[in-house]
Length: 158
Length: 381
Image (cartoon, rainbow over the protein chains, first blue to last red):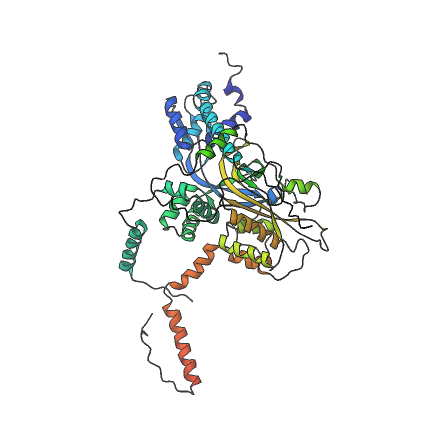
C-alpha cells in the first residue's frame, strides 16, 4: 500500500492523534496491556519524561453552562518518550496511577507516527474502539430499559 | 494552649497492632479485597472520593478498607495522600451535557426532552431488608431475566448528548440566566492553594460545597426546606453518568481526553417572586459531585441557592444556610473532625490549669478559706 504522504514529514493529523490518545487513555489498563503484548513490538526508546503520578484539578461550570469552578482532583500519570529508531515522540497523560498503561499509551502514540501505524490501528486501536462502543451501547441500553413515563392523574375533586 | 506529652510508645505500638487485627476481624471470615470494596461498596467509594476531593476509586476503596469502613477517616487518608501529588494541570471545564447518563430525572417536567431514565436507584424500593442478600451464593440476583429482556429491546438506543432541562426554561426567559464567563476570565480561586477568602465568591463556595460533608450539607439543605431561608426548591434535573475529562497538553497544542469520571449533577429550580434587583423568575442552585452522590448533589444545590441570596437582592433571613462564612467554615469534615477529635488527646496541663483556677474560685467563694480539697488523680501532666 502506498502511503499518501510521509507521516513523519508532516506529523500526524491532530484530530486523529487526539482520537487515539483519548481512546488509549480511556481503555481498561489490562486490556490495553494484553493487546500490546499481542502486537509483539518492543521498540527501543528513551524517556523524555519518565512516568510521573500526579493530579489534575477538575473544573466544573456553575449551572452546567456558566463560569468555571474547581471541583476536585483526578489522579493521572504522564510520560513522554522518543523512539530511538525513528525519533518519533510519544506522549501520554492518562487517568489513574498505572505507570505501565501510561508507558504503553506513549509508545503507541509514538509508533502511530511510524510505518507500523496501520498495523497498530488494526490490531490494537480498532479492537479497543469496538469494545468501547459495545460497552457504551450496552450501558445506554441498560439505562434506556429504565426509561419511565410518568402520568399525572386528575383526582376529580372539582 | 496545647502542651505536648511524650512517652507511651510501647502502648501505642500495641494499640496499632491490635487495630490491624481488629480491622481484619474474625480470621475465619474471608478478607475483603480492595476491588470488592470498589465494586460492591461503590457508593461509599463515591462519598470518599467526593469529600476526599480526589477521583480515584481504587484509592478510595483502599482508604475505606484501612479505615475499617469509617468514611470520614477514609476521607482523611485521601486528603493526606492528595497533598503528596504534584499538580500536573487543570481540566477544561467538564461538559456535563456530554454525560453518558445512567440516570437522569426531572421532578419538574414529566416529559423531559431526552426522557426520564431511572438508572440503578433506591427510589421506589420498599426499604424492606432483603434477606436473600444475606444468603450466600445468590448469584444473578442483580440482573434477572426481565431486565435482560428489556435491555435487548432497547439496543438501538445509541448514547446521545442529553440536553439540560434548564435550557428549556432558560429559552423562555423564565429562569435566571447563568452568567457566562468571558474567555479571558481569571482562573477560579482554589482553596487547596490559598486560604479561603471571605466573603467567598460563588466559585469558591461551590468548591467548598463539593468537598463538604454530606451530612452537614444535608442538614443545612433540609433547614432551608423547613423554613430557615426558604427557597422552595424543585429538582429541575438530576443526572448521574460519566463525562470525558479533557486536559490541554501545551507541548502538543491541543487538549486530549485523559479518561472519564462519573459525576452527579443536580440543578435546583426555585420559586422566586422577584426583588429590587431581579424580575420574577425561577432561580437556580447547582450541585456537582465526584461519583454517584445524589443526596449530596441535591443538598449542595439547595445550599448553593441559599447562599446566592445577596446577589438576588433577597432579604437576609439570618438563616444558617444563608451565612457563607458559617457554611463554608464548618462544611469540611476533615477540618471539623481534626479540631473536634484533638480534644480527646492528652490535655493534662491545660486541664490542670483549669482545675487550679476552679479550686481557687471555689475557695474564694467560701470566704477566703484557701484549704485545698483532696482530689484523686491530681498528679502532674
